[in-house]
Length: 89
Image (tube, rainbow, N blue to C red; front, side):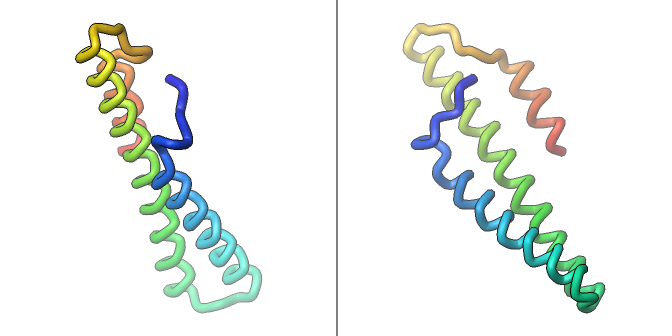
């Protein structure tokens, strides 16, 4: 299924934020900062990536539902979307 940037603007925003957070984690480790603070930031990066993935799957589900509503056959089956969703869990 083709990802359309106009439909995934929020995903891109989340990923860019996660990218900045990850850079902060790397810098924190390189500078020998506090372990607890570094792990807290790493957990935030992980959550941001998970949410971005879930948003992509949700967008795919909406796309498939809309395609079926218009009488078209979606590019992905519900089983394929479910497998992608479960890969994130």
